[in-house]
Length: 493
Ligand code: GDG
Image (cartoon, rainbow, N blue to C red; front, top):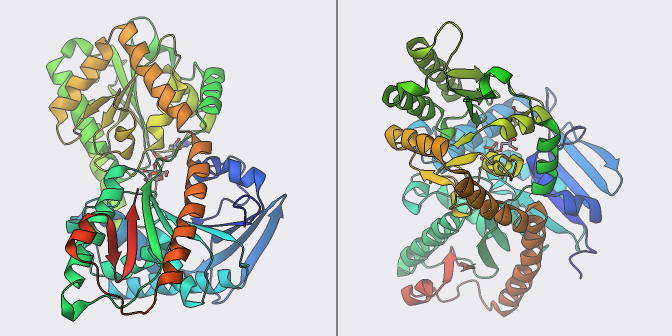
C-alpha cells in the first residue's frame, strides 16, 4: 500500500469546515489536503440538545469533512471539563490549576468512544489515520477495540510533561494506553519525546515486578519529535504587503515597537511579561515615551474559571503599569483583549522591533515563527524567546530567557533594542534558514512518512507476538531503547 495513494483520515477536536481563513492546523496540513483523498472528522464546534445527533458530511474537492455536534453535557465534561481543566493545565505543568473530576473523565472517555464508533463506520482498511491533540488521547485505543488495524498516528500539539508530573494525573495509565495504541506518537520537541520515553521506561521497569507483569503484547509504538512548521514564504509575503499597520506615533524616528501576540492563556506568561516591561521602565526611564508595547490577546476558553481569573489579573497588572508610567500622550502598554485580522497581525509583526514570545510552557509556539518570517531581512526585529517553548530547541539564535525572571527578560529587551544591525541580520538569517527547511510541508510529509515506517515495524512485532503474556522487558533492555507500557513497545527516534 503506498502512503500517498491511501486515503488520509484526519481527526481533530475542531474541524475547520467553512472557515474562510485557514488556521494553524489547516495551513500545516496543506500539502496533504491538496494532494490526497482526505476524510477530516471531529467536532463541528456546535452544541445540540439531542443525543445521537449524527454526522454532517460536506465534501470540498478531495476533502470530505464529517462533523458532529456535542451535547451540552459532552461539551462541559469532555471539552471544558477534562480536556481543559485537567489535561491542559497538567501538561503545562500547572498541577495547582488542575481539576480531576471523575465524572468529567468519564464523559471525556465516552466522547472518545462515540467518536471511535462513528469513525469506525466510515473507515476502510487501507486508510491512514492521523489523530491530533490532547482532546483525543484515548481515541486510538477505542478504535483498536473495534478491531481497527489501520496505521494510526497521534500528534501532541502541546507539551508532554515530565513523568513526575504525568503520573500525578490520576488517569495517567488510561491516557498512556491510548498513546500506546498508536503506531507513531509525534511530539513538538525532543524534550517532550524524551519525557514520554522516560515515563514509558519507568512504567516498564515497575511492571517488570512479577506481580505487575505486562498483560498485553504486540504493536510497537514509535515516538519521535516533529516540530510543527509554518508556510514561512507565504507568511513573509503577507507581512511585506501589510507592513505599516502600526500607528506612526509608535514607530517613527527614535521610537520602537515591542509586540506580543497570544491567546489569553495562563501558559503564555502574560503577567510575567507585563512585569518585565515594568522592570525595564524602572531601570531605564529614558525609554519612556520611546518604546511602546502592544499586546494582542484574543479571548479564549472564557467558560473555564482559571481563564476568567487570568484576565482580571492581567488587566490589573496592565492598569498598574500604565498608571505608573503613562503621560498625557503616551502609554507604555496597549492591550487589546481581541484578535486582529491575519493580514494586520502580519503587518504588525513586521513593524515591531522586538517580538516577545515568553510562555511559561508551550508545545511549539507558532507566533515565534510568524514573527521571524514577517521581518524585513534588511532590517529585522529581534525575537525574545522563552526557554520553555518547544520552538526554543529550533531557534537558539533568538534571545533565550527564563520568563519567571522579570529582570532577565527586561535585560533581554534592552539587549534587543540595542542590537547592531549586522548581528540582527545574522541571527534572522539563521532562523529563516531553519523555518524554510522545517516548514509546514516538511512537518506533514515527515510525520506521514514516519507513520508508514512505524506501521511496518509495528506489524512485524505483531506478527511475531506469540502470546499475550510475553516476557516483560528487563531494565537493561528498557535502557537500550526498547520500552514498554503495559507490554506495548515504544521505540524512540
Ligand atoms: C497550540 C499549542 C502549538 C493569535 N492571535 C491572533 C491570531 N493568532 C494566531 C497566531 C498563531 C496561532 O493563533 C497561535 O498559535 P500558537 O502556536 O502560538 O499557540 P496555541 O493556540 O496555544 O496552539 C502551541 C500550536 O498548537 C500548533 O501546534 O504551537 O504550542 O499550544 O498562528 O498567529 N490570528 C489572528 N488574529 C489574532 O489576533 N488572525
